Image (tube, rainbow, N blue to C red; front, side, top):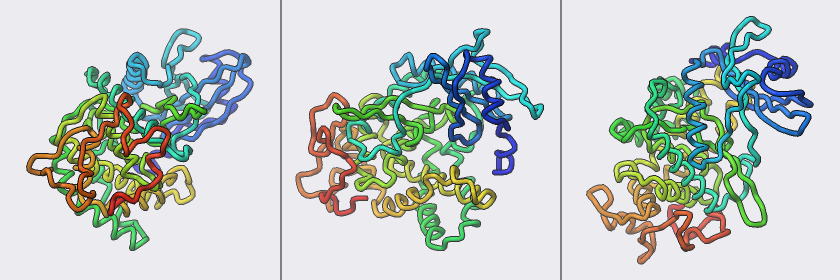
Length: 396
């Protein structure tokens, strides 16, 4: 679906019409405020009693089956202790309602609970603990989602990492910046083997979009904690390793020590849901693949909608991160992730001397970044894992 189709597919309604639609879902309102979104339209509702919630008006192409799957995923995630919004029944007890808007088109509508906190993207610095917590939450979520076998999960989705390369040729053709186009080409060459191996990795249903604007954080004198995981509109049956890889890609954006941020998150994920060796070997590359997918999408949509700032919200940081990640050889990234998961080096692709020349003598040792682990030199409590480090000669 191109930019023109996406724009035509979005619901067309004002805050005033959203308030009228919301009457079927909640009591008297004191305010209705539109929130940022891509395909659908979201409105924050504030009731007279102070209760806040979100009215979600789905894009025209969204089916009842897929939206019902999202509702199921959120319910299962909540049952597993993951802080996610809950779908709230309307006045008739329905979780989904078809509503015809003033333009004559019918969209699916639902209301979900409001969660406190601010986006992870706005949190500076990000502590190793909060990134480890995010990883562990995603691991617990995927353990639960692995139990779901629903026909709606088997769908074609643009943001499925397995589909990322389809956008590369047309995106590269419209990239006006020669330096960025060259960087894009170098990553395409490097990722070619990963794209082949990606189809061989274990698959299951995943959330698929733990970007730093879909993760909420609350801060206090006691530190940072994850208060919410939002937006299940991209959940899909795909490679399981894509879940932590996508979260890593966004956690590393504009961080002084991106590798430290990525390791903290990956370690947390593996503490809840251990990945296989073959997944760990590709995790760093899959994070880069998500960034490539993101900048490719931005290039395509900017060519048609150059004034839409929402579409390019993370483009510049993504390009900067891709440039810095290219300095780290794949074997180094794989070895560091293996250590972050608490595993020893070994095997044909990760020999015991894999980090020789990258870390000082004596520094090759497993790292336990689970939430219950004692402090380590890489993840000291209260210290930002993005504070930078002089220990690595090729630190991102």
